[in-house]
Length: 637
Image (cartoon, rainbow, N blue to C red):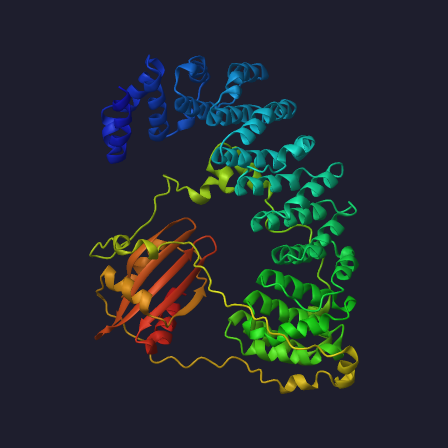
């Protein structure tokens, strides 16, 4: 009977009409209500939840009471399934709520952590609309959760800590008195330590902040660099959350005295965040940098943070222009984030210390305009044209201090927190993302289209190069240079600088030119109405063709099926496609009419929510690239 029940689900997947014709659903309901074997009942529950049109209709008072009364007959695995089912039940009154919780009270002391979490979910969901009782439930479940987090293996400890994080974020004041429970232990894994540091930043208040920060400061010397960095970040987060607490920023700045590269780098990054949130601490931070002669850290994010600080508050630090000058000498070797920060910082500092920054501004704008990176190139051109057009307007745009930052985008919104709470005791707590992000909805079928030959392209794609993988490719980064030039003395710089009235004269002589206009496209191409290509050749060409053109169009109202049909009518066939709302990815190909050797390959990412299509085109030969891109753009718009 146990196996037969599961067989119904297999039949349902193959042909749902057979289940309906044989009335198997009704038989399952009878077995679910009346069978004497607990495992048969558990299997029937699992299958019914997947085949009935409205699983919520199964949740009735009689069914819930029947399952709870024989709960101990089920295996631990089945008990978890039953409790997950019961968690969706809504009692009629408070007495019924207490009756259910009294029945499940002993499950909180069970040795199986999955069973404890399932019970906690029932308690939380039953009382979510009764604030007083809900708070009592949170107080009751703290003990079992702390015990499991400290006394289980690393995998279970991490799982429990992930769920604790949800509860701590939901009720930080309730857990603030237990802040020592979140102190890191010597045998904790790195992942558990990171979660504990996150929870410490949430429970920190004016009463316990100094004790927590003193403890976290000890972790800065941890042999593991990840934990050391996270501890420094935690101190900064607490300082930004408790804006009135004195002494926290000083504790952060004390990390600069440790003379450890990774500690110094992370301190610079956090210091920049603090100045964005708490500009009143600028004097303290700049005083800590008084002895700074150059930016010695290698990490690009830290160099970018220091450049931002020097550009925003360079008027308070005498050596600021000369430190930036050393970075300017190695501009071409810096990472993109450092180059972008450098352009903004030098332009901003120019309005505060023009004589000392004039030559540096000319140098970085010229190097930026010659940079192959499009973002750096565009920003350099923007600043150049802005300065050349109107110096006063440029100062209003670039030179003013930005508004104080209140929150950062990494902080979770209340809506997301509520969603994660509803999905308690699931992978959502571990990923810190709602299930809709990583679980496909059975009701929303994945759309996949293939050409007439019905080629299953994915079978031919090597596992190491799955073209339908939405994961972003790792960007290759160039090594940052360490070369530096001797900084001139302030007196020498002032003597060599031009008069303030003529400081902008040299900007006109910059070899900064607008991007060359695109070469005119040749006569519109004509495509073969029935191109042919197999999956193996598509894969080989896509990996070998270096020339490509990337563009985005916004036609709005995207329907993937209509889109592929329209492109098929123009001779562009789909090799493979996949995805689900709102993101779809398609790989397509075409051939030039009368020249089978001339092929066109397209990767198209469709965002139906934003109404955008991002296309990457590759052609063989390369001379046809612009013509095909123009043809495709016209077709899509």
